[in-house]
Image (cartoon, rainbow, N blue to C red; front, top):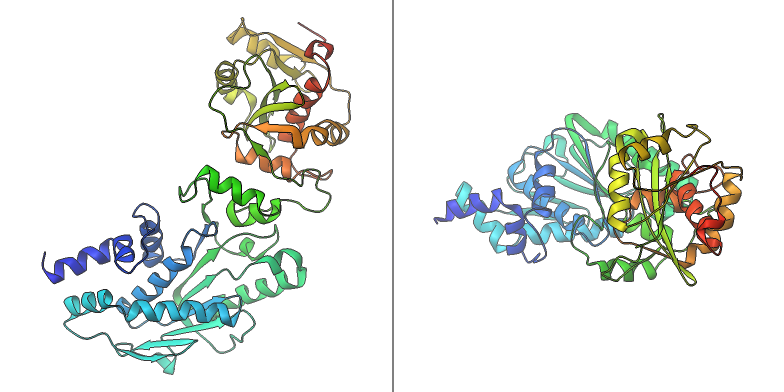
Length: 425
């Protein structure tokens, strides 16, 4: 392979280039994809990735490569504080001054890569054609001034943090900064956003819908790593940093993290199953399997934002997989329609229809809250299902998962499930 062929290969495979720069944990199917997406973006984009996923390191490579191959464009980079900015500027400078980057530049251009200026806030290359005297790369904290500044590429990294979660004033300030970036961005330019969500009303609601990579999907953390992290911090902090979501803290009933089953067998065998059915609109169909063993309840939960008809076959497969029966469902909404459909599709599966009389909030706050710390969740439980439980308050927009789980907890709170008398069957 000639030096030019090697240079082209490394540019086309940025994760390989990252590993050559010393970022040994870079993966082609993850970090390489992120870098390519950010480099090729023509419009504003948002990337959310969990803490420790090397998203900021990817951004440093993106900035360095943009500076080399887009010599007519200038970049403004924002982080929360000036010290945060200086950390990234220093890393970009290290990349630009690395032997491998200089070799690539020389192989493809025949020239020498020269950094003309490098400070804690600015970097410019000798090849940069400076419009209006602007620095090629300018770093600014969110407390700095953007007045009169313009850029072809604006990059934000973690401009939303814990301060935005606890302070409405900080959230409003960050939103104002992000709105100002629309004036900073030159016509035909783009904004690249990276970070993690902290609050339902934070500045992410102003950004393009994010591409999300949480701790369960990147493969960078083992289940053991995830559990240790979960136990080392508050549920809201873990949710924001690793699951890329917010959970309610005010009036929350379920503040402690869910506990997950570590065995290999099926602890739900001969348990029961409950369906909270949706019949349209924005409601979710939730299914919960549960079995009580002494002072513990083993549970599995899954939900779909779909009419129950469209997911009934999946529900029946869950009943078979975990060997749970009977299937409980209420008659309040459908007058027994679901029970009839289950019996038509699976006549051998016993169904128990009941009429719900108990106030939903009282049921959830009594039974599910009582058992919450004693529930062992199967690890394949839907994260959206658990998130809906942890987000639950009396005023929650959605309550299908906690409602279904509380019905299982109520069933198993009694000595035998037969004491939970069905009205039919």
